Structure formats: structure tokens, C-alpha cells
Length: 512
Image 1 (cartoon, rainbow, N blue to C red):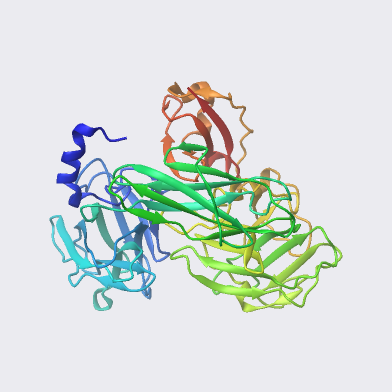
Image 2: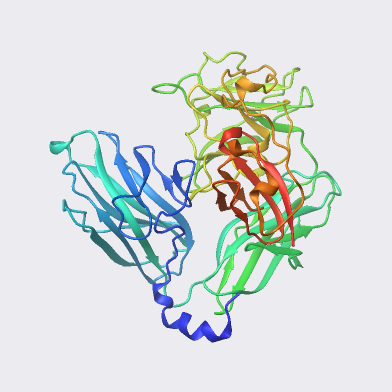
């Protein structure tokens, strides 16, 4: 929290507040800069020689001669309408094969682009442009787009990026980065926990979660039951079978500015139907992709059920597959195939070819989500899945549950990397060969632990490092590069991920 003695100073420089996380590309995880996302047409690398500020910069390599877009991006930020924002970045660019420039996507509509591109020079150059947000602006996503110059193309344009800045106005409303509930599809009488990850340029002074059963005509107000690392948690009491619970959250900061989340819905009464296996990428132009759902009630009528693809780039719904008119087969497996080459298919539609990660797939009934899968690195993108995302697997690999239909409401735990897809058949036991080729024994963790201890107290084996530490909202909060790193986090529940382990993660409880 801010002390009174520094509030005047904060207000004096508030217009310089940088909304970007990891603006100098100092933090990296899994080969990507933390909090940033990238388009498929570029590769990015951590650079420690050509640096503008700090210890690292980002090397951006344009790899496609035919790309339409090749973006490095971050978002989404809550913004104010009809307000001037400034987006700047330092670029080192001396490659005649390419150029870069900045852009901003405004939501719900509109975009703004810098008039100036980078130029070839042997010195760092400062690119900056200011623009007024649209009158209906609610949030923004900032981009740095790479372009090829066809007459001088050499197949590998290189740019170095550092010290990006997206400036907010003098006062900025709270930013609601993510709101979700657990379980996704609760049983009758089971309470539901609602999580909201919210940040602000000052402090949140009031917060409320409102919910209503079957409508929001007279919503009930809830206060948070806990708040850890900017994540607020509320508990909605259990309801009856068939009820639809609607909820939204409101946050007000010390400037008197407020932010209201989207309205979310959950259906009471477990439907017993799950996204079970997905193949979304094959070599070249995709063919033979599929989505498999699994149900425990053979002969179940699928009227009202649908699969909805949610774009990981901007949150838009890009496909809808209506399952009405179908029934669940006797074996419980229903396969939606991109084409008829997929074995055991029950429905054929080109929409079964999902986008590569990061991306999302929702299973809905009457447009209320009852199961969701998100896959890819959770940096700067729209994640609508459960807890932490499943990995973005290689082509011809499938993401699948084991056992079939096993659901902990946590994509990273529930979905495994299968080298051999099995549409319409049970997923095999997840053995060594199916753990992303990782032959590492499962660790034994000390639990609970106190904040401030060395990671060696928690996990002493060197082969598990580096360890990524996520909070309960799915935010990456630190990376332990070795066992001598210090676990310096507030009390609460956290999840550890080790690249050496492939899929899966471990939960720890930190106490003071």
C-alpha cells in the first residue's frame, strides 16, 4: 500500500505511469518475455549484448516472407475514453530487410497506428506516438509490428527492442486482468469461489461481487473473503439443480475511479460432459484435426450444447459448433472432425480445426460454459480456460485427459501431451513416453512452508530448476533459477511448474 508521504509525489509524476508489465524485457520464462505475447511470424530471444537499459533486451526475428502480421503485444489495459495515451519504445534496427512500428487495438472497436517506422541506423532510436482513445474505449492492447521490405528481403530481418512504455493519464481506473470461478460447473449445494485479479496505480478502497440466481434484478452483494497478491476471492453459496448464477465484480480506487467486470454465468448441476481430447495442428495446411468430447451418460441428448472457440489474441469468438440434433454414443466419445479422414468421427465440420496456441475452447449449454480448455503460455493474452493453461503442443500431438473425463478444473493438471492421438477411443495411461519425453521422477515437496525460506528447503533436486511460481489467479509472480533462490511471497496457495517435468504442476501452501 502507498504511504501518505509519497502520494503527492506519485500524483506529480502520474502521467508518466507505465501500464506495461516487464517493459524492459528483464524477466523471461519458457523462452518468452514474461507478460508479452508474440505472433507466429516472429521468433524472440533474450539479448544481453545489444541492450538499451537494464541487463536484457528482446531480439525480434521476422521469419516469414509472406506474413500479414508479426506482432509483439501486451494487453489488455483498462483505459478511459477520449483520453490521450502515449506509446513509446526504444529500437535498435540496422537491417534493410525490415521495419517496425507501433500500434494500439482499442476495445470494443478501433485501432491506431504510428505514422513513423523505424529506420536503419547503428544507434538506438526512440519511437513514440500519442493518440486519443475512441469515445467508446474500454480497454487497449499495444503492439510492435514487424514488416518485411520485399525488394530487400534477406529472409531474416532482426530488430532489438527495449524499454517500452505505455503511459496512462493522471489518474487511471483499476485494471481487472482476469475474473473466473471454481468449480466451472458446480454440483447442487456446492459453493463457488470467484477470483478477480485486479491492479491499480494507487489502492483499491472498495470491492464488491454481486450475484443473482437466474437473473440480476436484485443482486446480492458479497465482500471478499481473502485478498492475496492483488487477487480478490469471494464465495457464492450453493444453489439448486438447474439454476443459473450470474455475477460481476466492482472495484473503486483511491481516485474515485471504478472498474466493472464482465457479467459471468455458471450452471448448477454437473452435466457430466467434458472436452476430452483435441488435435489442432498438423504439418503444413492442417488436415485431420478434431475435438473429442466425453460424457458419462450414454445416449445423452446434445440439444443446446455447443463448442465455441475464443481467440487467444483478442478474446473474440471465432467459431461456434452447434451440437444440437446429436446424441452421445454408447461408448461416451463424440468426435467432431475437420474432415472424414478422422477415425470414429460423429460430426464433420471445418470448424474443428482450432487455432494454434495461445487459444481457448469452451463447451457450453445454452451459452453458459460448463467446461473450458485454454492452451499456451499465459502471457499477455485472453485465457478463458480453467486455472492455468495446458501447454501448446507440437504438431501431430494431441492434448488429452487421463483418465477420460477426469476434471480437476485445472487445465495444466488435467491435459497431457499425447504423441499419438486417439479420436473416439480411451486415452492411454500417461507414461514416460507421453510426458513430453521428460524422464524425471516425480518430486516430493515439503508442504506447507514459510515465506522467506530457500527453495532448497522446498525442493532440493537441481534437475527441477528453473521453477515457475504462479499465484491462484494464474499469474506468473517469480522464477526460481536455482535451489538457492528465496521464496519471498505472501501467505497463500501457489503452483509450481518445472520445464523438466513437462505437463503437470505442484501446489504449495505458504504460511507466515
